[in-house]
Image (cartoon, rainbow, N blue to C red; front, side, top):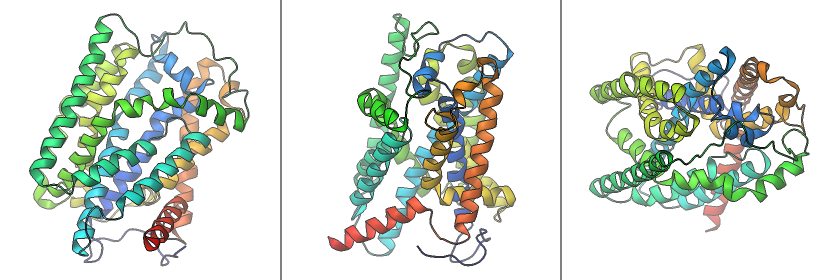
Length: 397
């Protein structure tokens, strides 16, 4: 691995590293920690994702349950959307770099997508059944070729994909009105045997493999939205959302996301039933994601040098792939039966403080990891393996 210079802190504006890159790294870090804010409730459920989904339709009965619902809704979908948009921004940056170097696009990107898919497959089987990397690999491969088209064609694909997504959401809403249910209810049968609380590491691997189709269904459902958000991220980057002249664009994104979408999302998500989670997560929350992106971009244009918190976030952003896998692994060790089995040891009334404590612990672990690792190396371990594998494959071809 390549070692870094002594100080890993992000510098201010310079010809070699524009200040806007600070915002990009920080946004990736925010997205990684934000997705943990959603996934931690899955990891701390004694029945894992099965228990989490079955509890979504449960009406709050006390102050702790209301607190849980609010905390879940604050993270639900916003940071997944932000991570998705940031992948699109990353594709735009790679395409611009290829053009500056005189390389064709997408060039060797399909190999990058294949390696990301392999990372996701291993993460899905060994760590977390809610992995997003496989879906991003497929989406990135599609969008890489779409970015080779002209702006008008890209705009047509963007509108088409978001339209397909709206149709799917409308069909889902119609099914709810017809009396269907997608998230189960509190009267569902307990998971027996329960591989999360009682099984070994291998038992969970087998459980994920046996239920792979069910666990991957969501990724298929949101593929049109993912393609749309990737394309939107690329177009926002080209439109100057990270440049000083993009101030008007950022203001509109902040106004729409925080002024309209965020209150609506919180109101519907907290007061509505659990079956509305897909509507808030995949229809309203992405607007909040764009507001977060615009707000952070504006902040670092006004204050180019990252402070203490910004540097820690940027470190996580620079090792985003490693931290994404590590945070789920650490939480699994703490919560699942093959590790310390803490999730099954806490009573339901202690679930909220326990989950918050687990979140703080995991954030501290990955933050410390990213900080120490980047003092010696340029890339996270998974990023290094991914980059090295890509270089060897492309040289061989």
